[in-house]
Amino acid sequence: MSYRNKTYVAFASEDISKYRLMEAWRENANIDFDFYDAHDLFISRDTSKPETIKRNLRERMKNAKQVVLLGSSDGKKKGGDGVSFLAHEVKVMIEFNLPVVVANLDGDRNIDRNFIPAPLLNADYYTLSVSFQPKIIKFALDNYAPGYATSDNSGPHYYKSEIYEQLGL
Image (cartoon, rainbow, N blue to C red; front, side, top):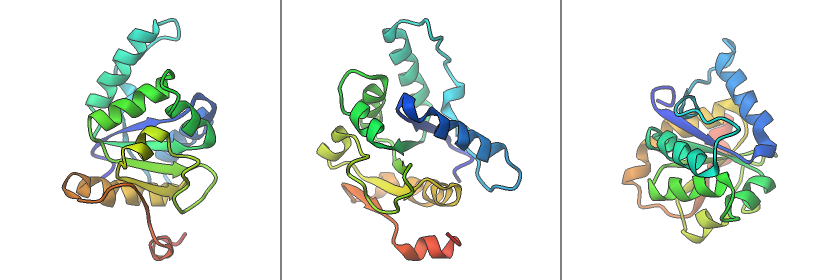
């Protein structure tokens, strides 16, 4: 269950408002969405050196069992630039072989290669793209993430429209 596993949410700094929205979903009693946020561990200050921040990001990700990557053009750019903190996070999620749910911020329900950082695409990394909605993200964390380690799948995937219909979306 998604709420039992530490979830690491990776995003470009330009998309922090969407991360805050996810936190609000979690706190809203009328929305069935919960996750243990790996960002609560190993807090870095804005004045920390980049090496310290990267070390703390790695430690947070060591405690995570799954990743939600907020999919956007900024996320793709930064996640593949090789120097940003998001690029470091993408490198570490691949290294740790974590399941990655790409939540498309534009609401797209299909694979949007314009939102997936190049290192994930180049590695043919098994990801699952969903729309940025609490029900489908929770469904992916509950269903895709647990089977990730034993799956033979590779590359980006998405749920067919029937799954969204079953969830009332």
